[in-house]
Image 1 (cartoon, rainbow, N blue to C red):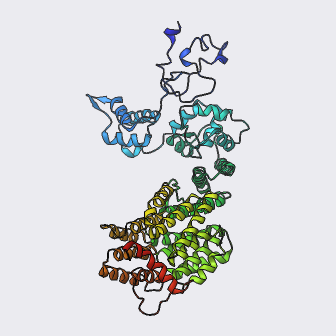
Image 2: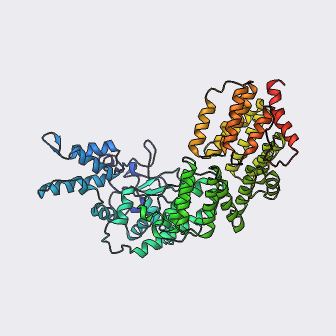
Image 3: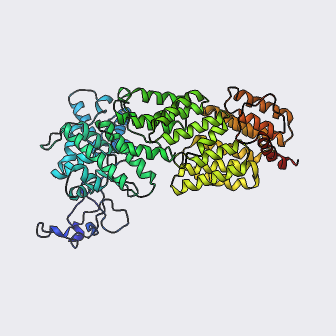
Length: 597
């Protein structure tokens, strides 16, 4: 009899059949695992049984692919052998359904109702949520499950702990039962394994809810606050430098705070953790009306993050403009406003606008906030750019790890042609970054070490560049990537570079990172010197003079002359930290062995 009644392979539905549950014995006549072997589930719940595995062969209705959606609608209503619903209308319905079969079925019913009343079904009629979708979604749920369902419609993804905390329930039972429902998606590899269908989420939030336990706006805001606090607790409880957990909590938390006008709370600390590693992963949030983009502190912070991530892919002038717009809202708390000021000052420095950069860096440094050490490093960089190496060196020696002092020292000794001291400093910077678990700083220090090695030991530069590329993989650091490409040119200097120099010059111009241009010309000066191309050397040095005619980075022109063993015409504007003759000798001997002199 069991064989004749085993319908588990044939009965589709929105809920898992529980007839094999031993707990039902005595409540129904034909129950238990012996009676329904194909429905027998393992001890631990498995919301999505894989094909070919034990523990049940139930086929739950899931999402349709776009092709399946079109096919369903074309076959569902046919007249004279042709689909009754037009192709244009089918496309609108399919896109709005997100593959949800229930939505497709409701759309067909609405289509028939419109035709029955003599109206022509138009596309805009179907570009909306169906109230019936909400009613049918809630119909099968208990009151605690409905409470959890509304709660988990707030975050993009969730686990049982987040769902239970957001719903303010004492136990996880209701959340666990809801996770078994087919309207819940599961990704076992996600940070939070469960999520609701996008259409269910939007309908729950926007359609009228006629149930007796429907939520008020205050209920929704209170639940959002609990979800935000729970995400912050999960981030704080994370062990190690887990960027995936950080960015996941930030993305979900920012959306909750922005959409429900919540205080930033832990998001401010997470913002500093996000920027500290120089990873710049994008934190995309659902779009809002442009008028509301900066309507709250969370909205302004979201725009700040978006700008910092996108600056790796757009001109620095656009970055400075967007950061100025964020600051103009005056919505960010003081310490986060300083973050925006600092990165705008960095953009100004990249653009060669060092006066504006110096003003911003000084403001942040004098403020004494969390970005003060970074601003002090920025001022040291600006002193180096101006050729004031004694000031840059004195500042660098006070920076320590918070200001990345070893890297700043490496930059100073590199400018002097003292590649051994520069390499030692960059190695110390990389080791320190590794000890602090800062992958971004490791990549920067290693890339500069590769550049240094390419100048004084090109035979060993390959291994340093390989390591730099490995550390840069998965990071979004445009300026550092440009430095790595320049290091490759230095390593190959004297050989056939083809048009690599021209391509890199164009890439630097497109990025708006003016500070990288003199370094490229220095590399090309070495290349032409090694090839004995005196005219090309002269042209390169002329370009360097044009690039540094405002006085910033003028030491590059001096270094290029020293590499080529040429005389500096006129008085140098550079104030070196070493005897000028020592600097000249250091640069000259970098080229001598490679050209056999």
